[in-house]
Length: 218
Ligand code: URA
Image (cartoon, rainbow, N blue to C red; front, side, top):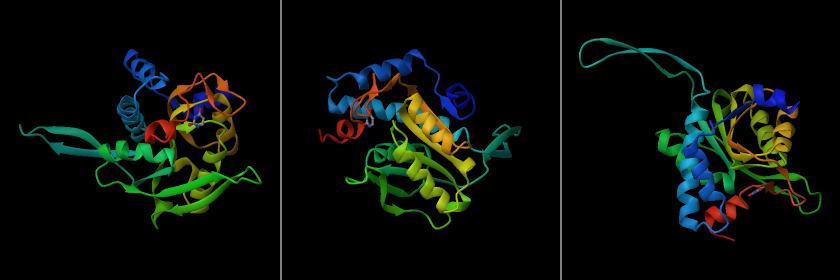
């Protein structure tokens, strides 16, 4: 089944030498925080560009300085970025860097200490979100529990499933399956698919706790 999801739902960035070199820096347990932030932001920039490429475009012609016509394109629809607090906020500046004036919503989901289930603590989304394409941002798609809860929040707000692009730095087959089984029209953009989850739900070979490493709270 995972093969079907990989074909239909997942856009994996081309595994170029450059991308692997960036991953080599950020996955190194001895990377400095400055390097971790700088190089993970470079990966995030590539992911956001790839995510934007999945959105609809419409034709737009312009006249060039030499009086000729360039048959171009422009974005067809409005977008909004929605980072899942906290790790997703690491992706906000990468989105702002390529989408001038982009609207940003927020969703905070955390695992309930008693039920162990993901629980929505906070959301702040543009009123017209139902008419927008959503770039949902979380650098880690591991078990899929948080991602599924966040996607459900968006659907409850009227966003169409096919209008959601989930952008994540690293994922695993378990996470992809959990999300795509429940939301078969979602699209996922990622830069790496790991081997598996360990017993503590960390990805292997993985990157450790992305939020702690990015925000310096480990
Ligand atoms: N969250 C992380 O930060 N890292 C993982 O490997 C899994 C979830």
